[in-house]
Length: 117
Length: 493
Figure 1 (tube, chains in turn green, red):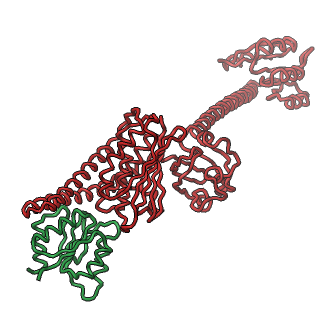
Figure 2 (cartoon, chains in turn brown, orange):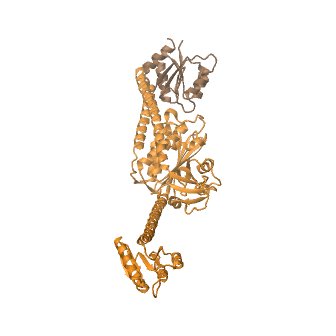
Figure 3 (cartoon, rainbow over the protein chains, first blue to last red):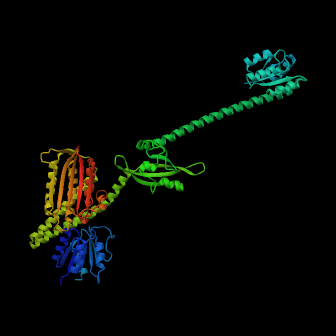
């Protein structure tokens, strides 16, 4: 079964990039440009993995993470992809942390690893 | 110099004997054989000591003594008395004769009397000298005191700080020139009323605290001056105690630290700035990577739409990077304005042309209420600087519209331009997402951005600076979910 990835970033250029990258590598995707949209998609689509930006205008990625991590039986791996320097904003339980600009091959390798393929 | 002695006696033998003895002791001795001659010689000789016989014809010794003491009380007089003249001798002492010698004259007794007279003279001279020294000392100290007082007053007055002395009722009892220059004669007026237009001392007032605990206190306050400008002041208060140690006055020193504040703000802004810039750049580079990836993925799949999407992203990111670099360049150097005459109508037209594509792409309608093409209104501005400022505001308006999710909203940006007296007023109003009231001030002053990865917090800061450099004003009015309106007024000249 194809793994589904929820891509969250406020910059549409970046969600488009990640969406194409993941699709080209055989993943199903859904994208959200803010926290609210992401929350809806998370419930609707039950993704196997989330890539999450931290600094977003309406809701920070950390807050979105807190919300979804409270849902029953939550064990979806989250890969943080952020431009913020320092680990202050990172999510301790994240599966991986990528700083922007990231290396596409490294990211793909990590996704593969996390999804245990 | 030897002391002068006048010896007055009718009796020749006595005269000679005494004279011989005195000369031997080193005195300059003159003699007179009667009272009249003696008195004349007192006037011409000015002797230090007179030795006079009590009984002389015409003017007797006692009369001579009286006359001498009246004439010059510093001349010491020794009386020579005969047997049975004790009464006269005592009278002489009452009239300030230094001593008396009884006849027959014993030279040892003369020497004792002389010593007493000389002692008296020396003591008096020392006293005079001492008094004189004392007087000159007092004069010197007084002069020093005057100088230091003058210097103190000068310091007090010429100090660049605002200094005032305040009593327990918060009334100003003394103040320096700086205060007078700014507030006029404020004697007896309340400090809080005069300096802060308040009806009572404010909560954090350092003067009040010093009255309470006698310690030094500081505070920073903002004061709005008559011309409407706001300045930052640093206040220091220190106690002035009376002789009993009770704080009866407080000295308040206030320094204008507006420039320091501006610098601080600037530095703080710069710190924030650098982190927001680096965050922005990272996002843009990731976007560029994305564009590049989409293009190569599109080429591989022969997917023209994907290539187009990739190219659009790349173009958008390149434009963002370009704008950011230009902003940084403009901000990093405080360039003087290069003013030129600019036709307002053309200026606005160009602005609209530049924004046109971006607005159409985002389905935002433009309403333009500009001057007439032939109005010929010209302003003297740095075209590039003001153009960038207005462009930044327009781009913010577009972003505010893009953030609206309700697809039924007819997104509109309205640009209106009018000539109001000697100012050109530009208004840029959008019906985008709006700004909460608490952020309306922050929009300019604190590298604030509510656009996440899309914003750097630079645009409006620079816009405000540019307008201010033109002696213009910029303000924002907004209601969340309804509209945002920027009003920029720039003097024609």
